[in-house]
Length: 274
Ligand code: DGL
Image (cartoon, rainbow, N blue to C red; front, side, top):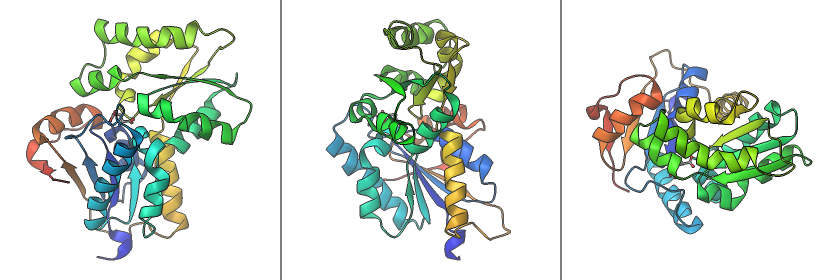
């Protein structure tokens, strides 16, 4: 197999990164993918930066051994904490995170220059979205909130309804509606799990707030990189998409279906040990 025909590695702490994989598959119909969800160690969002860096390096090394031509860190927490260290550790392949593409989507969406961000505790603590957004536009006002419980709801398959809306409201009310001098018109879903909750989030946020996530802008950034570095797949054979998890393939398959929009069966998920 030529180097260009090798798959793109996509990594997340669990199934949330499948929202990014879905966008990648749509934007890059000729590319093959290997997706790895570190389901044994999810969530990353509550762990220390050192632990997230260590876990992320281990998963990336496994994908490199499987012969990927580039890596997408489809996890906001890992991107915010471990992108630079991973780029240093793996100089042989391009590594892209989801924070910068998410920041670009936020800047494109806001008119008022007031941007709200929801993410995991780890991403918020690290301040990566604030830095990435301010790099693009220094005068915007940004407020962020950790919404860790939304990860559990998304993993549980509870995507809408009364309980989900109550939890979303508890997080969003103080952020969007009760922060003095802050009138956001854009809410960044800074966690790969949150897009599946977007109906409930939009209902609570109200119609004047645009929801933004990094899936599409990440896919566009990957497409641009492949073209620039002449890494696009050349083969005429159908592309492949392989799924790996570090635990519970049955659960992965069940939940993945809701994130991907098509059915995966347990025997399509390879179990791997890091
Ligand atoms: N995938 C993580 C993210 O996008 C959320 C899940 C976790 O906490 O590991 O931040």
